[in-house]
Image (cartoon, rainbow, N blue to C red):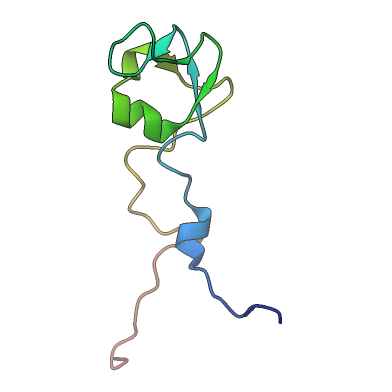
Length: 92
């Protein structure tokens, strides 16, 4: 039996870039818990963003080549060429 295909996605969520990159690149060996015997990643490995957050590896990773982070302040202007719609007198 096929699943439902009428699931709707919001156009604003589809157009927005993710806040975190799909992965980071390790710039040094990364360890879990600070133990030399718990090595998780070597230099050059792809590191999942949730692992960077969980283990505090921000200083040991970099963004992948070619990744452009999303703008921090989205523009308050509408994305239309003509500007914001206005109502006429009497239209409510």
